[in-house]
Length: 110
Length: 117
Image (cartoon, rainbow over all chains, first blue to last red; front, side):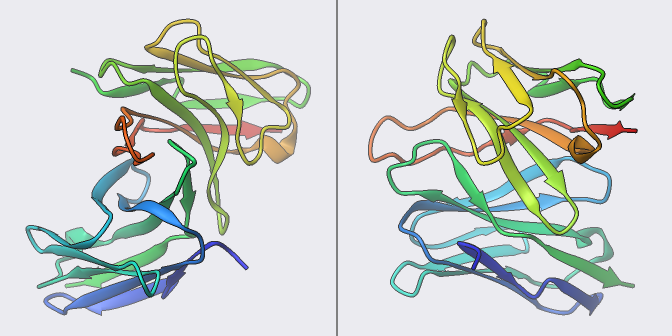
């Protein structure tokens, strides 16, 4: 079983819809990261969080440390949000190294 | 401020050939990483470095070597390329926080697409 699991693996939405991507992990962590990768593009860090909730524009990331679960929400989705969203965790005590989920491929149709 | 750059962007090798991938960062980051990304596998750590002159093995180090002679550069070498090393390679860097083992945000390069025939 992977230490970081994302769901769903693939997601198709209509423009304007509210989107949720989930991430569960099984190890003790010091931080959780959400990353974005556009088709053929590089990887960009969206959020790093160790508790609570962070918001940036239409993106919201939450984490529940007790339940070892995080969610990434996209409000008022747009076709330009189409990308692969990757969850990764920094294992507690293993400074620097990340454990990655397999990614969620999101397609937002106009 | 270029961030993290990688050279080359694309490369095709024949089995048994060698090559070096170069990663450079201009953010004065201590930590640097090499990952490979394969369909359905997610990102996997090959080697990493926590400072100039240091390197360590990651999850999938076999067939690769690295060097960090200068703080800003991290080289990934393939001594004898194999078709199984066909992948997209990403370099990343970060500046770790000093307490609690909390890792700061990793900044990724644009990737190198390598095909081994």
